Length: 81
Image (cartoon, rainbow, N blue to C red):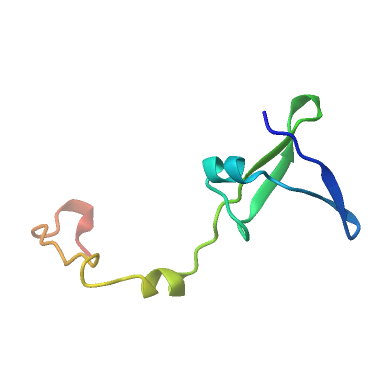
């Protein structure tokens, strides 16, 4: 178990996460963390869920990861428009 201290940062408190712990958790400077309180007053830090923007996702499309149209045959049943 690693130990660390809380430091004052403006009107809040800051915690330093030791490098080996940050590396094993897969977090680095600038990452957003969700903070919650568990049972017995335990403070839980977990990586915050990322919000994706369509513009950023589309920018990552390349010729290698772009899938081509697949022919599935003629529409059947309620697929017919």
